[in-house]
Image (cartoon, rainbow, N blue to C red; front, side):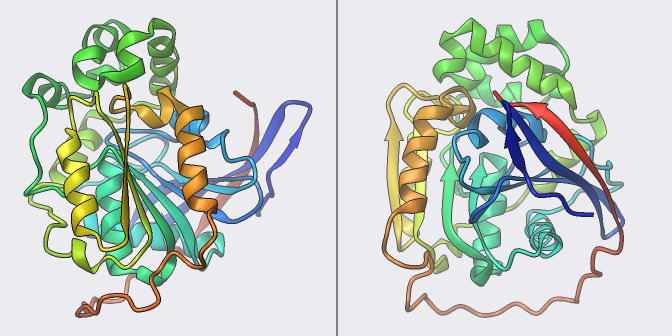
Length: 313
């Protein structure tokens, strides 16, 4: 069963489904109507954490997912690599009946979005890479911030998150206690399992987009904050320099969680990029690349559906 999102008296109705993909049970949600916008999550993230950002795109069909090992999705037995996660996004779009989407990739999800744009260029219209890097070849972040990512404890312990947020994430989250409280509540809704979190970390080990960045053909917005301890601005500059049709935007005072702790500001900036005139996001003469041959993946064979109602933020 599919359900279209409907807003009535401050409520939003959205479809909540599980798809079967390569033995994984993947949680997918869809809300709203309009051009499809696919949101690709970061390390350990669950779909509830996107709510402040997605509320800035009421004229869009928002597609979200919990990656394997996070949220309500099943925990895999082995690491799921970045290219495999890009294939998962294609399975999600196919399940939603979306031949293409504008794509926003955040942090870890920015790596997956880069891979998606390279492996499946016709399925992406415009690309947004937020607070992310190229993997191997990137400029390292501040060591205490990176060390904070070694454990999922910030998803479980409010006191730990509150103590480490400034050093790890910077930006509004570091400066505003009320924002930290909101973040804590969203994180604790469906925290990642310890195994799932560790497998996500292993899944990106050894990955790099350095060698294919120049062959990403899409109109791309690379956006970051100048107060991000995890992903220094130099990484966004590198991406913008190497992706042929990229624009760089550095947000003053923003940190790593800029999409969520400064959602109205970022929604306006990203919305302007996604909605600007000038035709499709893929350049008319995209750079040529060698097509990789892969074993066909099994289709999503089952789907369980429900409809849930939640108050808007």
